[in-house]
Length: 238
Ligand code: ADP
Ligand code: MG
Image (cartoon, rainbow, N blue to C red; front, top):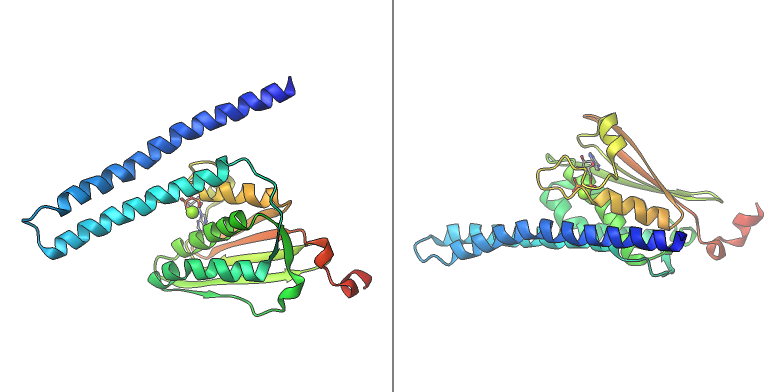
């Protein structure tokens, strides 16, 4: 009976997701189509045409962002246990997000550390998506630019990763709603990024906590269990 229930619930989620995806992807696609149609008008200037095409591309990016967010959430987690170096994964995520950071005049600082200590297990693609979601939120919270600081430390039990911005911050009410599907304060937000990030980290047996103050900034802390076999033996002995 329990199996049946779980199955029914999954089916329900799947059909709900399918309906949401088609609904949410259709909007940017419709807008994109409109701009493409306007851009072939021979009467308009080259500059106007450029602007139209830019808008069209932006909306397509948005459609693909929505699909990415949904896919991670909807995909049944095929147990994939990649051995990952947190430093390398961070470096990679930072490289991916760099263009957006540069555009927003946000400086990202990564700590310089001996990376041997920081190994975790999980699905690389998902971990990347989680890091990128949180970095992206940090950048988006600083429309006037600023600095995004990444920290990394560890003890025997856990690896602690912090991502701190000096952006607009969140009220207590906003913090409580963080991770709730569709909760967004952005005009063009999906409200799915944090939900997906929470589910990814909990799938890795980790935890995300948030500390934020309006007008000061936000700090996300991710705690992950270290990969046992990767802990140097002297660390275990002492
Ligand atoms: P989206 O970014 O599409 O709005 P998310 O799930 O990524 O969706 O984030 C949900 C909401 O949480 C955001 O709209 C914003 O209000 C808040 N939030 C998340 N990260 C931050 C941050 N670093 N600073 C301020 N607010 C944040
Ligand atoms: Mg987001």
